[in-house]
Image (cartoon, rainbow, N blue to C red; front, side, top):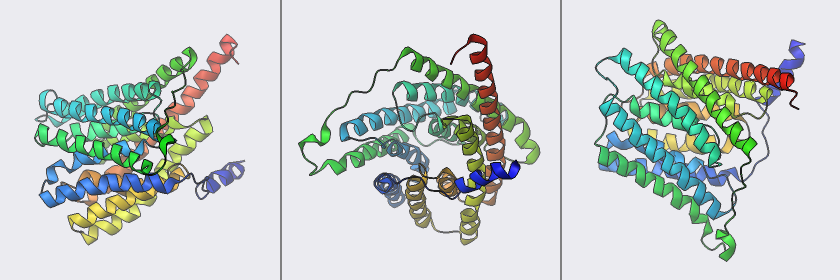
Length: 358
């Protein structure tokens, strides 16, 4: 029985889904993060790099046909990231108690839990793709956790400029494409049942991300691990699946892909590459991530892992501690996420049986 279950899972690690011109969005997102980081490197503004990294996430929201539809989706996602970056900076300055690390950790977990639910609901109502709040959790918590913030105006200009660059890169393919390239398509109306499902999904994001944050904050110190918000990011990964089996598989792919991705980090850290090489590496990892993320989540995670670690370390330098933290927090978060998926599936089945819902 176990062997029967393991065979399809093993195949899922090496099976590629159909290609859908992934190289174009991969190229756009790679340029969208490489170009502004290179500019900051030339200007000597390393303190602004983290804000550019999260502003560049706007380019990920471009897998939709039609340039008007893509612009609408990316403009909405860009607005969300701009608000999140601003909110994280304000929270760090006026609310989070940096002088008390223990209290600050709980404050960040609480705020990020709210972001998890809000990001999921807004993404659902705005019909953004990808769905969920994974990127929003990562952006908010990473910036709110910074011990020192860059000047707010400079940071917002850097993030805003990167967002505008992503919008421009998303539209550049329309040049010479003909007058019909900007044809507008109305978004389908959301039925009351779908809206209800979106709010339920938001609740699951709150519960799952919150539980992962609490578990990581309680457990990680005993394991000498930091970056507890990585557990929250990992916990919401399984929620993006269409079926319980698919969701559980995504959680397992996250863990195994993270472990495999550490090979790149173990090679990078001893080399101690110069910053320009790290920026170039980050662009390459971004390209490879988008090439595989819809075709094989496990393979995508191999490149997501070093990309995330390099991205949050650009201003501080690479270190072996981030590898350990990433592994511990990913395992904690993925376990919580998978347990949440299974519990939600059992609860849904019980409710459908009780009320006779097909």
